[in-house]
Each structure stands twice: as structure tokens, then as C-alpha cells.
Length: 237
Ligand SMILES: [Zn+2]
Image (cartoon, rainbow, N blue to C red; front, side, top):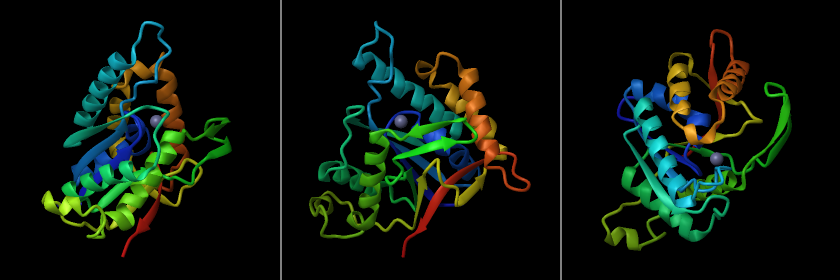
């Protein structure tokens, strides 16, 4: 992973920590440079009657930055979209393309936009509906990587701003219901838990979260792996 650049695009602060942080921390240890791009301000994720959206988004950004530091992520970029209202329109795609052309990642990690729900997950004992922001983030990022960032004539204004077209080599998509590309995260699993623990505003009891994450990571265990993360991998030409 030496000299590789990895960009993880999530909808909310904590998305990439839940789904991919073991892999990201591992690749950073192996020499990669990693960045996070978080598309919303995470301003709706609280039931506290005294919490305001403004206050919450500041807290959540800080939590995400602390988590990123633990993982060795070089920088977290935040866009200013509103939680639960993310739409994969051309303007969101343009914003993502701008980061792809600026950071020039070899690998982009994001959510699988085709993942709507799964009726039952044996490692949790219940089903799961994927948040619409996750699907929008995945779709906009997929389109941004291919073909928009690659094609010079897409968003030609970027060229005037010194941003050149860029080809992403590999896409990793997060989908709880699929496990076709497994990454052994045994060595960085502790870091993943540490990073997740930073998102204090999101949990009443982190022990419950820890158990849930452990169950899932162990479920993905293959042969000698103790803990793993899973993706669908797309190699682009
Ligand atoms: Zn989320």
C-alpha cells in the first residue's frame, strides 16, 4: 500500500468508522495515505431535547476528527449537506469530483447504493434498512468516480482551477448483506473500536455497540482471521 491514496466517502460522521476503519487503519500502517470526505453535517442524530442541529454538527465533526486521528487518516473534509436530505444530484457529484481530482485517490471506499435493506442478519439477530443518505452517498460517489472525474469535459470549470481529470483504479463498496472481498483487520480491530468510541454523542452505552461490532467482525472470520471487514471490490480499467 506504499504511496497509495485512499479516499473514504461517507454520508455521516461515523459511517466509515463503522464500515471500513479497520481496513483504512491497516492500509495506513502499510504506507497508504487516507482521507475522509463526509457529506453531511450529521446534525439530526440526537434525541436529546436540549440539543440543537448547530451544536450537534460541531460535536459530531469533532468526534469524527478524533476518530480519524486514531486511525491515522490524514485529513477529514466535511461538506455541508443536511442529514436525511442527501440527494445524489449533479451538484453533489460535482463536489465529490472536485475532491477526487484534488486528492487523486487510487482507491475509493463508499457505500453500496444498491443496498436498500436486508430482512435478517444472523450475526445481529434482526434485519436492517439502509439509510437513504448512505445510498445517496454511494450513488453520487460511484458516478463521480466513473465516469465524471475521469472525463476532462465533465465540469470543465475544474480545469481552469488547476484540477486535472483523474482515474480511480479501485472501488470498494460497503454492503452488510454481501461479503465478496474480505480484509483481515485483526491487527487494527482495537483501533477500530477506539475510533468508534470517539462518537460519544451517538451512544447511550458503548458496550452494546462494541458487542455488535465484534459479532459482525467475527462473523466474517475466514480461516486464520479473527476479525474482518467486507466489501464488494470493483477494479476499474
Ligand atoms: Zn450513517
